Image (cartoon, rainbow, N blue to C red; front, top):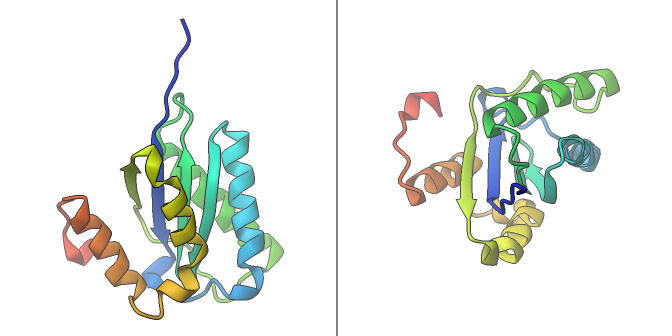
Length: 147
């Protein structure tokens, strides 16, 4: 018997100190690189995007992979890629931790739209406000000093 899963994740992580170092110019290269990492790990990539200080990943994680290990691998690989390719000269790394939120499969299209339109979205809500809202919506207890 095989293993079959369909767990839709939105994974979110930020630049160190939420610094706006992910300039628009090279973001698409970073998003494509992250998509490549996900595909190599047999994850089904739905959407990768973000803004100047954070990343959103919409994916189905392969059942043999722990989400925490996946995020760790993405952060290590992208950190090296950003520095090697000089994508974002002011980039100093990623914040510790991440958010991972699950959704019903019916949420795919709204999530894709939301991630594709981060630039527009952040004209009305800061990245930090967005992240805090998500944590609250999912009833996740947190200490604000670690955000």
